[in-house]
Amino acid sequence: MTSLTDRKNAAISRGVGMTTQIYAERAENAEIWDKEGNRYIDFASGIAVVNTGHRHPKVIAAVKAQLDRFTHTCHQVVPYENYVHLAERLNAIVPGGFAKKTIFVTTGAEAVENAVKIARAATGRQAIVAFGGGFHGRTFMGMALTGKVVPYKVGFGAMPADVFHAPFPVELHGVSVEQSLAALKKLFAADVDPNRVAAIIIEPVQGEGGFYPVPTAFMKALREICDQYGILLIADEVQTGFARTGKLLAMEHHGVAPDLTTMAKSLAGGFPLAAVTGRAEIMDAPGPGGLGGTYGGNPLGIAAAHAVLDVIAEENLCERANQLGNRLKQRLAAIREKAPEIVDIRGPGFMNAVEFNDVKTNVPSAEFANKVRLLALEKGLILLTCGVHGNVIRFLAPITIQDDVFAEALDILESSILEARG
Image (cartoon, rainbow, N blue to C red; front, side, top):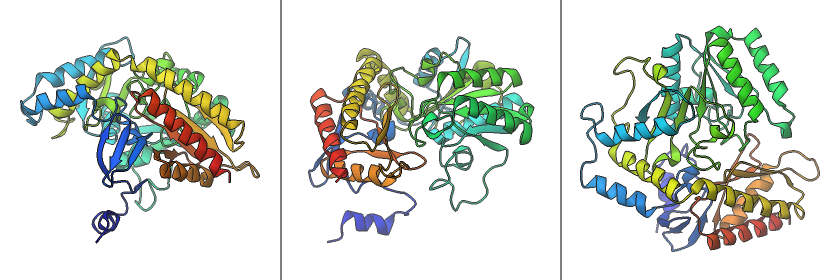
């Protein structure tokens, strides 16, 4: 009998990488059961998508109610009130004490693409500055902005022009805030006139790059640089958004308002929806028809997003994220006393990571991180690695995870790290 893995290999492009060979049958909150009936604790959340848990009852109820009304009209052809209402809600909650407007699209990469389009239309400039280690999607503009070659850029040819990269400040890897700012200044002197730069895009916490938070001093300095040269600041909140960092949006940690904010992933609790929210006059720069898409703001995703925002407020998920993150970081700190491979434990709220080095050479150890991941998977815990060096494990469990399931997961994590030491 042909296995599902064999069927997958025969039918699906190998370019669609798979972290596990688990084929989901059903899921509930923080747990997944595969087709063989095996149970797993999900510390991936579909890569930060189900912050409110798999199949949250209020999200499912909202989508079912919408199914009974209509599933698609294309908002650009026959609009609907829920789209307008969700835009109003995002305009109110996205940081910035100024008038805002919103558009809805389908994916995070699409949100980034549209933010760049809007920035170029609003400024009349072309150049974009991004950061090493950043991840902004797999479309061509997304790849160009992403600061990691393998596997995202390799083999895909020339990237779009007028995209420049500066080093991201990570003290652990010897790059200070001052050095990053000096490199940006050098970039403006040697490679691109800052008066040609439409936008600087940055993740408040790097996602694929290793869960490195932006230092507040750096974010404030970027805001000042943008104001000095008339550059727009884009906050890519695709992975950081919606209670994950202990705030509804991660930029709230810095007291800095971006001009444009991109959102997706957990916005709709498992349904495809993405958004760009920004200053009203900037968002109005493109002409009618310049923005949008057939599926942008799909009614089911819009309904789910309304429910997600309600759940975050009703269940105090920002506070819950801080509580869970503190428990996780405390447990990792205790494990660190027995596992010197751990060189860093970090992350705001429940957007946390642990980084591993080889104890003999003190260089990043992707091998150790992957060994921990595989051992945990054998024990029923799904983990994800990340980082430019592949030596980071990131933790993205649903913020709604039950206390007993969370405690079980922490026990598995500890035993996997200690077992990986051999």
